[in-house]
Image 1 (cartoon, rainbow, N blue to C red):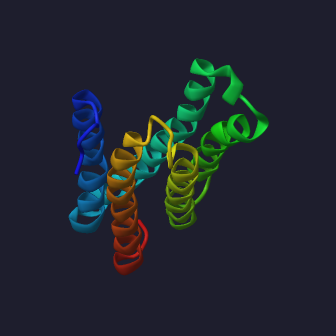
Image 2 (image 1 turned 60 degrees about the vertical axis):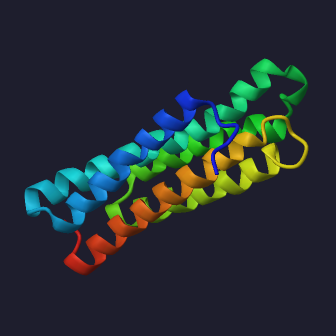
Length: 150
């Protein structure tokens, strides 16, 4: 399933899901002070990860300047702006925004790295990590809706 994905990327990428899943569990099962802290941490971590996904496109453009067109570079800064806005919002809309941003970033990467792109192996990792992060954010969202936002 992850053939062709370099081991450091696979290991660190999968480890990056631990905070998403752990924080979701704490929001769902923790007592109120823990839930509040975990919710803030989940939104912050989600914003950082979303920002990282935009930076990938700048990295590609740095390596291959011919790919530094307006669409790629504009998209490259968009996730950072979305993550920043999420930090300014109440929890419910912040989680919705981050979930949508992760999904949009995945669709963008499917378009950017699919087909004959020599970096197509990257999509294997991106799909798995995006699904894990999105499911964790959705679990957090459900947790605050069911239990009431802290």
